[in-house]
Image (cartoon, rainbow, N blue to C red):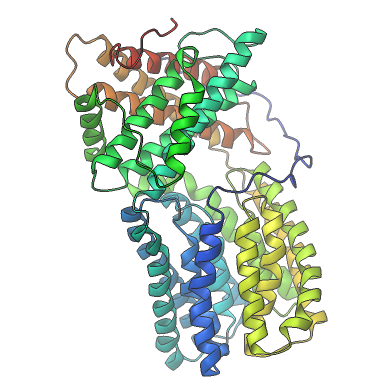
Length: 569
């Protein structure tokens, strides 16, 4: 592969979209799980505080309770570890916030600390890939804690409340494992099968209409056609299924049966013309319930399972190497949050942390996605403020009504947010306003005005910071991803060409190449969304994807006729 870098060309300015930003998606297949979990995790501590007449302490229990929102897609062994780290991370953030609040009342210092915490939350959320709801919950709680009146002597007790609620959230998150211990892996495998079946159907349709680019073995040129997008989605979903299975820990027979199903999805990706999508859909349906996992003949079990063992033993990238590419995003977050907070202070708004949290919530993988999130945030918050005007009279009937309203809004937020961020924000906004009233009811008009002003300030200033701190190394990341694909492709090709490859080597090389292709597509998509960026090597990306998928097809051929009778050349 040539090491030549693309010749610099005029820097294009990409248009920022409006069409489709507010379009509703299909709800998540497990939307009810985080919704119910957060109601239970928040409800028990808040109702306990209500019975004790100490709702003024709810901010600290909320810090631990909201940890129940995380890790719902992870297998339970991995979920237990992830939730423990989420709780510890939340406690560390709240400890810094409470100590700062107890040592100074300077709003300028508090905003600066809040901005630095937001940048740390963004970096650690991205490097660990903890997933939704990402860093915004950490930033919301820590920023609110910064502006809560505090003395040094109160800090240990408040942290103890957060820790107790965090332990309860951990139990809530792990409880479903008692009934369905392999549920997350089954769902991940079902998604992979369905996504692969959708790609096969798109491939067949494109072949019938003559719109497919023929490259053989399921690899095609171009990145805009429907079946190309379906292939990228299926590849990412299959990779996610493997990640779920590899993170699951022990591998009893039901989990090994899931591994064989994912192998069949990989085979279908490599040879869509020889695949029956109805069979993939049927397997996926069987996985959705509680029926036994479909058992396939383990003809090549030794090879495929040894490939899993090799992957489990492989070392992970160092933390420092994963943090490096995230520095522009950390800088964006710190700068945008600090400026938003200071502008809010200059305007005389009483709660500058609302502007800080709004700015922190914007930052996505690139400037275009950040712009879209900003539009969604503004629309959702403005409509949410109007909803607060409707809910406030009911919540003001008494402390019990206040707690119940907050629980209902918690459920609504998690039930709706997977449809589109702005829809979930409609419930998040009044919930955040009601939380401020746990220490005493306030005049709704002033709260609503502050929230609207802070939303606009945070969105505008936060986006300006995203434009100012462009990720100019996005092109370099593509070059690195291209190199990784080429190295993985060459390694897989050598294994295929070997007369007697080592046991498990072909399976491991195939997944290594598949992971590199998924990473390349994600990196290219992220770079393409930067507002101000040099021309990207799109042709090289397409060529790398084409040859990479062709090699994937060859690795499937190497598995033997029991998996694939005929792969189109």
